[in-house]
Image (tube, rainbow, N blue to C red):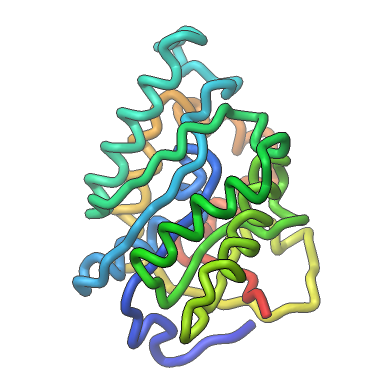
Length: 225
């Protein structure tokens, strides 16, 4: 694992490019919060509204028709808690991002990169992020980086929530988020339709319990070379 006294020192603008509302709640809201508290701009590009999510709340609080509206409101509330006011919604359909024209998607992301000129991009690993939408977004973001031709080129971090079981031969950057863990928990809870009932899921899975123990203490990222 890699680290320094302050791996976020000198950050100018963070760009987060993920697939679904609540993806950030698992992987990077602590890092986002720390940077916003320092006055660093954060832009969040979210590809879908999670229209096809399996969870509808417990007890159910949504139907298939209302779920995207609810998830959009939940995302807005989570970002209010974190302090991020620059949220870009691409409007793609959940669980179909892998079927989008990758060049067109990359061009849309590259346009945001050119506009905000990030110093760091957080996006998904294109092969080891657990969901086809995640992989497609990660591939598009990497292609967008090539097309944006930013100088200096931003560093790229990829949420490594599954690093306990997926062993890659790349460095892992660890961000200590203990000081803002309460913010991350509140942002996580804001996604009520998706996160209500997690206690039962944790009780049924030792792997998930272990991940949640460190998920609110630190955030781990694979460092893309």
